[in-house]
Length: 237
Image 1 (cartoon, rainbow, N blue to C red):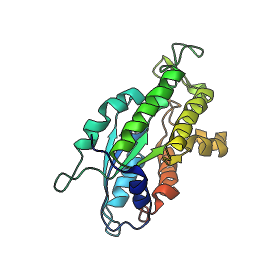
Image 2: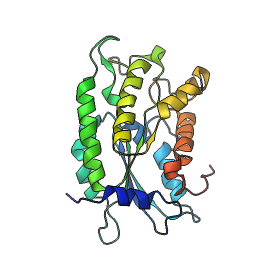
Image 3: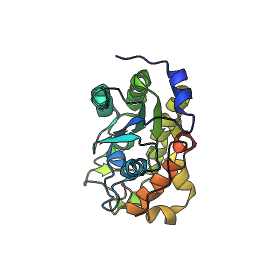
């Protein structure tokens, strides 16, 4: 496994106005894939299009989101995905955008059932994922969105609730903080914007953002200080 000096690599990457195109992979679940957004394809696709504009730095972005993936599945495919996304003389990616955890949190079968991934197991699995990722290259982590509990269950068997969402996202935040990984707390941002605002931006399943929601998510990511130095003006549709 390639080992990089994370502190120096992170410092170099975080400087706005990089003078070369970056190779970036976005790795995670359906929120990375963009499920629920037939108009613009999700926040990763919007970021990819923005980076293709003539006045951008030409960063290359691979969407490696898989619906239903949990932290364990993302960990299992992390290094293979990373090592097969080089360009130009097989150079490896420069940055990983991670977003995973929403599929670990639901209750199975009933509102008070067990979590799909046990809370303690999730803590360990996420720690393993982050430790492996930062050995490869710098990492940025995009958190999960809140859910609409009244629309549960999802797929007739998965009961999501915002209490569990908050517990699991706090694991993400604290694990990232421990490793100096920039973390974008989408959950807290969206909760602060109010119930009416959230309902307008969630799909009928109560779990995935709709096109309006992914637009909001894209804007949150695009304006994120950890990434904003590499973003050109937004795409006009």
